[in-house]
Image (cartoon, rainbow, N blue to C red; front, side, top):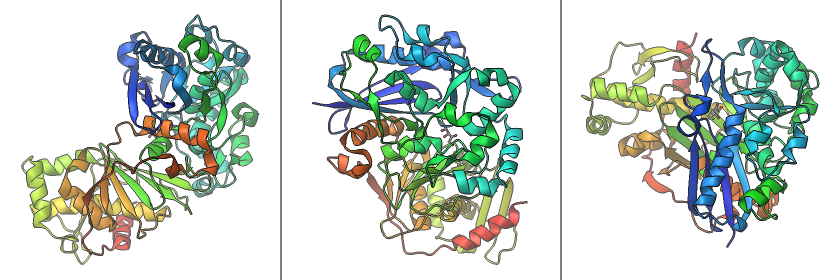
Length: 518
Ligand SMILES: O=C(CO)[C@@H](O)[C@H](O)CF
């Protein structure tokens, strides 16, 4: 009975999840960086430097965690011989810098020793910049200026310049630590670095995670020469060529065959970023949209004709090279919902829900826009209330305040999703996850605003699970096989809300939002 492994190199841990042939989870192990590798002295898996902008993680820590996780799986009696294919994911945007000559060590690892003892001196940059870094404003401005502005950069790479995006991080090293850059023979993302360890040679960056670098032309699926030339000399050669996310990169390295008992025929499928992997793990299809309702709310959607903009991110789709996915982050999520619960519902979610039931869709024309903290989408902050005549007002009734918050948050999501190319269709489905997805009344508003059924799914392991799915997909045919065909049974979605027939004026929301942005 074949099994598949998904590896997740996330911010706080390395997780390995095994599934059976039917892609049902059968085993899971993890190594938590802070508590199990305390010698690296990380907090939340990272080091925040004194400037409070630079955020890194020790590259060697990730290597050591992989050996530790596989040892846990071995001690648990897992049958590595059964593994037909593996794939994995890494926190997006992070980067790894392999020292000149490192490839020789990588392909000749001694299975009697830990990897990190052998690879510890193979990184020119010992502390990898990661997605929480925001120290590259200067590099972002430079790149946008070199390619003709933020919208041009977004049209090429799917995003305007963002501090955490890899190209800008590489430029920072090229301009400020040129000696380290010159000693670097290969630059990986966290995802392709992890794949390289398991492959025993440098793994290609995949199209989907590569879309988070401000370097990949997402239409041509090639490095944009305009961007790579603007970032650093000789960058193209250090990146290697990008590949489809379902590419069979090769067989597993002999180190793992001898040290853990993997089958030499086990194939390594391209690794990708955590958000693309989650899209695969949610089994997202055309017309679907994932709404994750957490501290910050995020939207992931499947797109066929993306419209890259100055907000949000468009990535090449991880399971279909000819499609795309979009990621939108909304910083004001559950903390704002909790503040309204406390202020207008006496701290009770039951009363919060009663308020939603006591008010009607569209809230008599009242719209609220509440950005307690600087919002990402759009770039604005403050509280704004409008009555049915679009006049600014100071307050609504308590129950109207609650509905105006929830409707406003979901109208924003639909408005920005449509700006990126999302088209509501008869087969549209909203897949809700995260804390607030446990509240039926909030999901009813979500369903009404999107005019689509809302399903809830447990996505706690979506990134890792998505990689086990992608391992089987890559092995069984990759791009020549529709991703949904690899599943034996229907997804475990549970219908939570169906829309009542109501039409929300999304464009009106857009006009009011535009009026409050500077
Ligand atoms: O920066 C992000 C996406 O653009 C985060 O979701 C990271 O991928 C988390 F690892």
